[in-house]
Amino acid sequence: MRYANDMPKTVPMPVGTLSSSLRLAVVRLNRCLRSQRADPSVTLTHIAALNTLDRFGPMTPGGLAAQEKVQPPSMTRVLASLEERGLVARAPHPTDGRQVIVALTDAGTKLIEEVRAREAWLSQRLKQLSEEDRETLREAIEVINKLMET
Image (cartoon, rainbow, N blue to C red; front, side):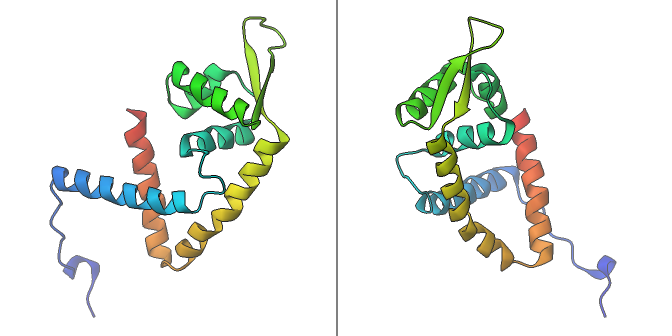
């Protein structure tokens, strides 16, 4: 029987190699996820914004930009595209006439529901992994989110 301290130590991957490997893995995963999209004309950025509105409710474009960690002009373009598709609607801010509130429309809610149904593909793949591998992915998500914070 081998004990944990008897196991061979892995050699740390050089940062440059780790960077390249991580980028390639993310690109491949992204490609697989894109192939599962309900509407290919709706980008992952659009879906992320819709998910945020679904999760947190109506908010200002600036609040949405902050949640998505993008610049307000970028979010303005995203919202214009979503509004053109009928997925979000703007309404006057109740206390600040200079602002608007953005909310999901019924079509936006329906699209999010379709996206979630298609996420079943990823859920099925995750179920095939060991509990240890799923825990490693959970920890990796935390690390990836830390990378995005800086």
